[in-house]
Each structure stands twice: as C-alpha cells, then as structure tokens.
Length: 100
Image (cartoon, rainbow, N blue to C red):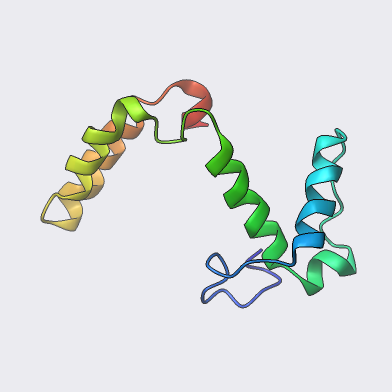
C-alpha cells in the first residue's frame, strides 16, 4: 500500500466499493489476489479498506478484549520509552495467532 500510494492519509481514505468487493471475493475464493493489477494500483485505498474491514469483522479484535485495559494503561504511560516497554510487555501476552 505504501509503495504504490500517497502515504499521508492512505489508511483513512476509503477505496471504491466495487474494487473492495472484487478484492474480497478473490480472497474468499481461496486465491492470492494479484495486487499489482492496474485496478488495485489505481485504487490502492481498496486494499487498505479491505484490511480495515477484516480487522473490524474479527470476532475478537487483534488486541483482544481481555487485554484492553492493559493496553489502555500502557498507552497512557507518560514517557515514550516507558510506554514502548509497557506496550511490548502487553503484546507478549497476546495469544500466538494475534501476536503473529
């Protein structure tokens, strides 16, 4: 996404619905979509939109409900160095599939 798009705001902008659906169908069919196709290069936002939709639709978020309070405490840490240390500690508590 960052290689082919304008990085500033690329994850905030939405792709074209038809392109997002086409990309979703390719993934759901069990294939690996060719992201270098012109349709996806011209609408790189459809790739980031589908990634965001995937994360939203997970039954348990990547940063899990169980660790939410720990993540909230970690990001509230005052100094950047201490904040990063605490975030790393909480990340290590994630279930393996979430951590990967």
